[in-house]
Structure formats: C-alpha cells, structure tokens
Image (cartoon, rainbow, N blue to C red):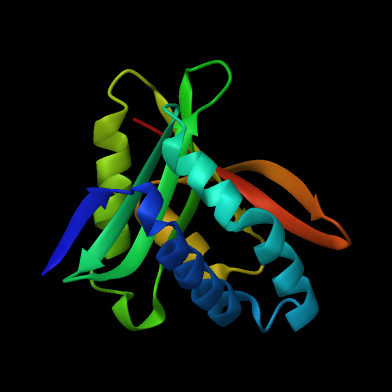
Length: 162
C-alpha cells in the first residue's frame, strides 16, 4: 500500500537514487549519459536535496511502498506567493500508471489552499509527462529554457487554475 509522507533529511540519499533512476529512464533517449549526469550532479546533489527538505518554504513529499521510496514531489510558493511551482514529480517506472503521481499532485493542491494557480515546467520532448499534466487540467502557458553547465533543456511552462 502506498503512503505519502513529508520527506525527512534522512530520506535524501534514497530520493537521490530515485531521481537518478527516473532521470535516466526518462531522458536517456533525449540527452547523452554525460548530460544526464551533469544535470543530476547539479540538481540532485545530497546537499541540495537536504537543503530543500529543510526549507520551510518547500513542500517536499515522498511516496513509499513499505520502506521503499517509489515517488517524490516537491513544490514551493512563487516569489509573488500567488502560485505554487511544482519543481519535481518523479515516479519509478514500475510504479507509474498506478495513481501515485495523481495522489502527489492532489496533495500539493490541498497543501496550498490560498493560491489560485499551480505552475510547472516540463521538458518539451517528455510527452508522457505532458499527457499526465494535461489529464490533470494543466495547460501550456509559455516556454522556458534551463541551462545546467553545458546542458540546455527546453521546456513548456504549464499551469492550472485551482
């Protein structure tokens, strides 16, 4: 049975492992192994994950099947505090299509009752993620480019009014 919890600092290493697996599985047909490692080393370092887990302005969730972390999601208020930005939502491949991602999105929405909009960025070639978010009422509202060292990631900005 899947249970959702707030992440703890001691979960950071397992979250890092989950992110490595999901990034490799999702982006290996889009980016080179070197590019994936570059992004993972920057965005998913233990130091950075621990900092986010401890940040009171970041809502950091994990989904567990028994003792195993099978999914994670983190979100925070935008600078204007009028919207929430989902920064990451990752589910292990063998746990996808079981409603876990949906449970995490619902939990984020419930946890920010005073905002009117949920925003996120999704890689332009990640069609499965785009379909998932569209299913949940998100619509494309623009584009954004992230650059991590020499890796350029072109994304759609998606949003949902709540």
